[in-house]
Image (cartoon, rainbow, N blue to C red; front, top):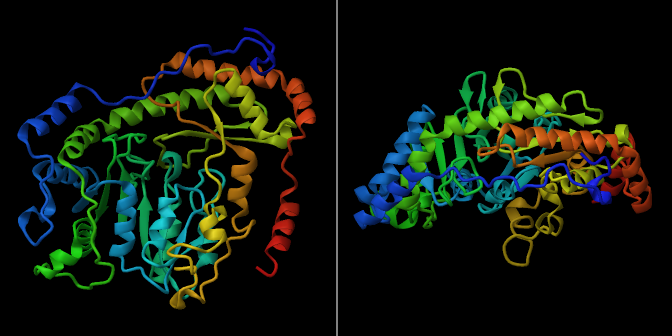
Length: 455
């Protein structure tokens, strides 16, 4: 192996492409073909009729999800984003309400709140497994708070016991965004089964892959009915005699899943344990190889939790290495190790929140009359742990899933070793590029407070 960094012209550790992820096989192909031969690609009617609930394969997949999660009800939709919106709507969240959300997630988690004209309030994350910090959640509660959306990020469950305790004490509902965590557990309890509604993604990038799709599970029949009405033209169905306790948010859409996706999803759900098991084997191997490497902090797994590794997230101690995270990742990538820096910018930094504009150009819902007293902070420093993790520490790889072989993981670890052996070369590059290292956290907090003054 060349000791000159590939970034500086040396030979990379890994010269082959990592194999592409494709969990689909002959059984899925046969299931899809069977749907096509049946001639029934969708079985819905947008009226008060037995077919309001969808076609036979949609119902079969929903039954399979409910059984797997030991939940009475499952409602499938065309995406997890749709499920999140339907979940927030089903809870009766609306103008004048606040929902506590994490800043470190896909934007649909948070825009689902805006879509019912309510206000997202961001609570910080903890820096071990990147879920909501319960103490930050408690501080974010106001008389307007109606619900909490928890995200089980990267495949590890958030601190649900503490969050549920807070929710019970304050009379709040809880939605679990499990898009990245199907099969994850906390002391034997499955992700998506501890809150009021659990949402799962079947997107092409996810462990269970139907191309597009999502499933919401719950234990309350009224919530199930309300989500199903949002999914399938609720205003018309209620007009046809379907009974619901409240008309709040019962404007319906076409958020329905087709029969092909449902047929594939049923097969994929049956393979979930095997798909997760291989991810766990690969992640464990990589963590063992990285353990003890200076400045490299392998992912944490909280005692009693089962991590399912949608991605492999680790942290870099840039000050200990005297090398910035971005440059370190650039050097790794040049060696063929498929890591990228950070995940997403804290969502409150998006223009929508900075300018407080959602619907139209008058600032709705942020400036609508019932929300004017709700003024959550969207300034830098709102969630300092998230900002530190995203800016300076986190690096991740999606290459921790089949069909990777053990040798692929070993080669990634070898790339880390090579980069760490050449830190002096990286430091010289850094001096030339003047990449910033993280400053003292106390100083960052003081600077953020100054930026937030008068906001």
